[in-house]
Image (cartoon, rainbow, N blue to C red; front, side, top):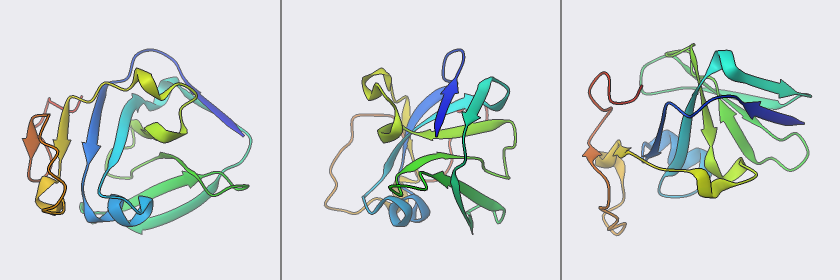
Length: 127
């Protein structure tokens, strides 16, 4: 199974929401948002879905062989795909612009190197 995305990412961010923490088993997830029209998957993924903070389904795609998180297709934003940076062949291309849902970040995680938003960023910043 492989995926690829054409063009540049729309934005990179670190998400600290409880849903991302539970899915990843970490304090937060580095994510790149890409245009769904330029995203292609070859092969089959495993799928899980939970209700996200928006009240709509957060659909996660994972490797059916090893279980690694690959990307998400959130119902709240059907025009995008959220790529989990750890699944990239070259994760060093990741350039985060901000951190979101910092209200959920554990107190012991002192990372403060990006603009921060307690919930979602203002419209226009994430696109």
